[in-house]
Image (cartoon, rainbow, N blue to C red; front, top):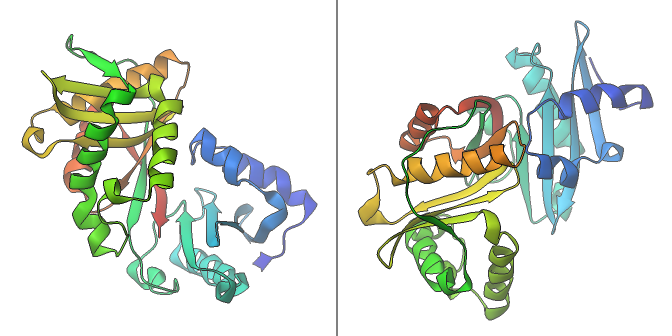
Length: 272
C-alpha cells in the first residue's frame, strides 16, 4: 500500500535513512522530511521516497527497508514517485535508490540515463601498506591535477556532452572555485609522485572517497589500490567507522580492486 507521509512515519524514515546507506555529508545535505512524497508499507516494513532540487536539477530518492525486495513493490514506489515530480519545471532529474533497479524500471525514468553508479563501503580495520611518500595537496599541484583529470575524463565528458570536455578549459570563475575546493580539503587530498611526475591522487572528504585518478602510464600497477588504502587508513584514524565511495556499475576493474581491498557493494544506485 502506498500513502502520503504522516508525522508518525518520521521515526521510521530516520531509522532507514541513517542506517548506513549514505555518506555523512549526503545525509546532512539532502535529508528534508518535509519534502517526502510517499510511504510504501508491506508486511510491517516500509519504504519511502522524497524529492528536492539542487540548481534546478531534481533529486528523487527511494529508500527501502532491506526486507522489501520484490520487483512489484520497488516498481510501484518508483512510478508513484515519478508521477508526483514537477518534471516540466526542471532542467534534469537524478534518481537515487537503495535497491538496484531493473532495466525495465530504468526505462520508466524520464530522459536519457547518463551514468549509473553503485555505492561501496569499507567497514574493516586498518590496512597494511608499504612505506611510501604520499603527500597532501599544495597549490603548486593544481595544474598537474587539473591536466590529469582533463585527460582521464575527456572521453566520458564528450560522450555525455558535458562541456567543457577538458576540465582545464572551464571558465576562470569555475577554475577558481575548483582551486578553493582543493585547498579546503588539502589535508585529505593525497598525491603520489614518481620524482616530479604525478602518478595519481585521491580525494577523501570526511568518510567519502570522492575521487581516484591514476595517470595512464601508471595504471594497473597497484597505485590505485595504494592510494585507496592510504585514504581508508586516514579516515579510520579520524574516527570514521565506515568509508564510502561510488563507482560506475560497469567499471568491473575498479569494483574488483575495491572488493580486493575489503569494500562491499551496497544496495544503492545513483543514476543521472
